Image (tube, rainbow, N blue to C red):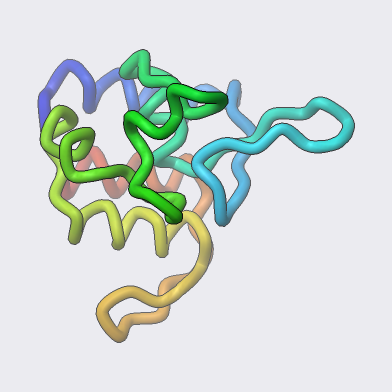
Length: 114
């Protein structure tokens, strides 16, 4: 992963500015509150649109995951994306059940392993 982007992502996750959600890169609730998964926060700090018509430029069709072109731009593999998504959502990946991790815990994982 590109070091400058990695640092911005870690700082954003640890900042407390973004409210964590699961199942979506980005979602605006009925009350107008915006929530993100860890990959959605990555898109925000990278200047990618994840809401509206331009979201299709970064999202895999029919899924709430990043497409291969966006992953390549970020320097992430699909396997890394799958693990991060599972950590964020508390789901399984490659036969491993992950507990739901906070943004702070995910930031530590990114710092140590990506």
